[in-house]
Length: 233
Ligand SMILES: C[S@@+](CC[C@H](N)C(=O)[O-])C[C@H]1O[C@@H](n2cnc3c(N)ncnc32)[C@H](O)[C@@H]1O
Image 1 (cartoon, rainbow, N blue to C red):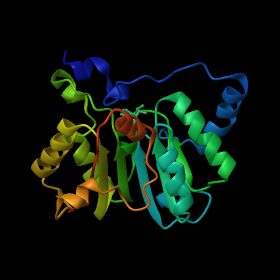
Image 2 (tube, rainbow, N blue to C red):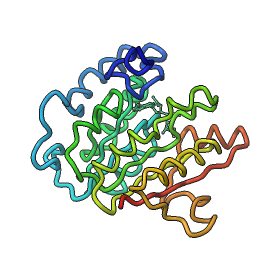
Image 3 (cartoon, rainbow, N blue to C red):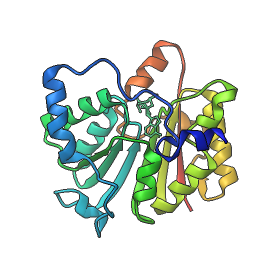
């Protein structure tokens, strides 16, 4: 039996922790009321059109995989109120934090999924997304763990299917080997064009970039980042 078969479909691309410090009473209570209101139910077929997932009219659709503390997701959701956002994060403490700020700020254009993003990707209809953000994905720096990296030929094929032609895949990382890995995987896949004409393009953060918790950690530890943008062909 291969490693993948042993792990089963439910955890195809998720190798991290689902729980951290126990949530305090009030936090747990908030999560249990907010999560059902924002959670996407992938056991049912997706709504037609997908835009009906949000209770407000949305024009563009965007997915953030592994939103961690959620600072980027909530920032973008407020910056772009007519874009529908889907945030995916299996770590329950991060989900609680995001939903608390979604509620505080009244962001109605956010929906969430709390498990492996590959399941959500497989549920989405073809060509529905304008953008996918994969920001500081788990780096798996040891060579023997590289196969756990979220960027793989299989997942790029998933991205390619759900992105509109011309849609964007944005990838940020502070780990050189993962940046090179992603450039090579996208080149070999053949369905993505890297939109960079000079070094400034990939060393400059995305427009309106609010930074993230993992980026702050990378800076404290002396690492710089690359910000790659690919266009789905
Ligand atoms: C290194 S953290 C980065 C968090 C955040 N993007 C940031 O920049 O601060 C990677 C996050 O991806 C999440 N993650 C890992 N594998 C995932 C998967 N298969 N689907 C969804 N999220 C995943 C982890 O739980 C973790 O919160």
